[in-house]
Amino acid sequence: MRIIQIIDSLEAGGAERMAISYANALAKKIEFAGLIVTRNEGSLLHQIDADVSYLYLNKKHTFDLRSVLKLKSFVKQNKITIAHAHGTSFFTAVLLKLTYPKIKLIWHDHYGARANESIWNNLILSFCSCFFSCTFVVNHQLEVWANKNLLTKKKYFLPNFATFDDNVLKETILKSEEGKRIVCIANLKQPKNHITILRAFAEMNLMELGWSLHLIGKDYKDDYSAILKEFISKNNLENYVFIYGSKTDIKYILSQATIGVLASTAEGFPVTLLEYGLAKLSVISTNTGHCPMIIQDNFSGLLFTPLDSFQLQVQLDKMISKESLRISFALHLHQLVVDNYSKEKVIDILIKNYEKLSDSK
Image (cartoon, rainbow, N blue to C red):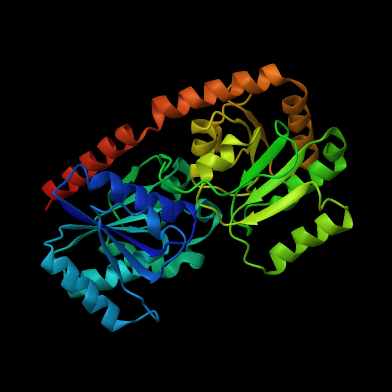
């Protein structure tokens, strides 16, 4: 098999990290594995393995013929048979299909909030779906949406997996008291819902107990970011709540943390929860998307309704007050991730789906 992954950028995000993870893993399993980045390179660039064939298109606008022809040339030269497009890169992939019809096109939907959107918000996607040979989705809500709104006949659920790159330089030192650090790994944007975490932290006066909150993720320095920083300032939390921006040394960061939190109002299949599990963190998670399948309430962590700050406070109080509970949850989550969401298992499923597609006419 000769397969490329296509993604619009290499900024730190779930879809971007999965595109790289697939390319890296496949390079050791199949004849040819490539990664195409259409619009912007970013902080994840150095995580691409040397045996992955890499192409940056530097696409400037929606209908960029130069970049499409560059991609077509790469595909023909390397005899690519399947293009696996992630997220918003589907449009570039469809343009490739129009100029090179023999390629088989897969679209991979990582966007959990789409499950609550109408077809009117996705008309271009719906039209383009007639060119997809199959669609992968990261949770069953998206599968229901795809069955209702997309023209693709074949749709498959494909779980995410997480790995840590041990070659990443350990450089991020978390501030404040060891053993009392709460971390949230999520870019500072909707629907990540950081404000609910901040409110719970402040209303519980956790700083008086020595606890601190650490926000890891790209800071877009926009209105969303401004609201968070204003809340921190108004509540005198500057010495207890810390914003670090986008980081790549995630394993090292999590090794310094005590509790992992995710509060999104919508999720697909967050790699963050898998990373918390690999790091043996105790976790409090939103109950949206695929999260309840990973965080089984009162077994592998605690769940809450994302807009309910009081419910989050109750779960935080449980987690903070009982170290034995934290240890139990962390061990259960770690085992669940290892047993169900390992790289080996997911890549085997992926390759079997590729084989089905290759065998079909």
